[in-house]
Length: 188
Image 1 (tube, rainbow, N blue to C red):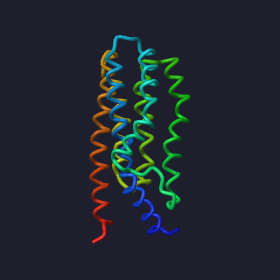
Image 2 (tube, one colour):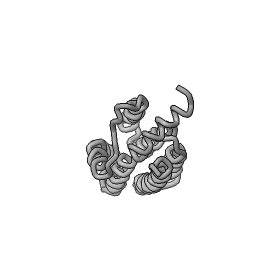
Image 3 (spheres, rainbow, N blue to C red):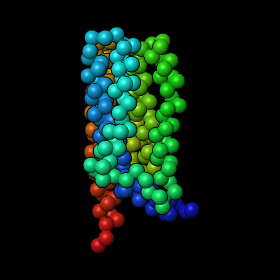
Image 4 (cartoon, rainbow, N blue to C red):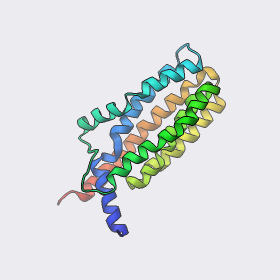
């Protein structure tokens, strides 16, 4: 397979899946709830457990949004399509580290979860052939670290607000990229 053929497959994924905006919108909603959880008057461990619970509906919510937004999760004819799911599952291998933080340093759980969330976006930049995912992988990860370093323990919910805002901007960028690509491949 040569580069133009590969780019054509990536373009098909980008347009058919609308750059994965069903996932980024779902994540924006979930992270807004996570920010709210970290405003509650519980210890860091309990809030972290609530975060795990609130994160559970992510996939069903993204699936529901895919129906509303008419995005495609499966493109049988595209050999790259299964890679998207594998890239998503790759973040699960970071969960032992997340559990260690939960058990030993729960006050850093939110930051750790945010960095895992942000960093897992990086390969999607190649997958959908756009810069947005790579850019926000760094912005989300570094921003989460900075907020955690400089915010007081009571204000760690700013991490959740930060992620929600970043995901919203990311979604807008992904949608603009989708529109540009869709218009470029639209029949004349």
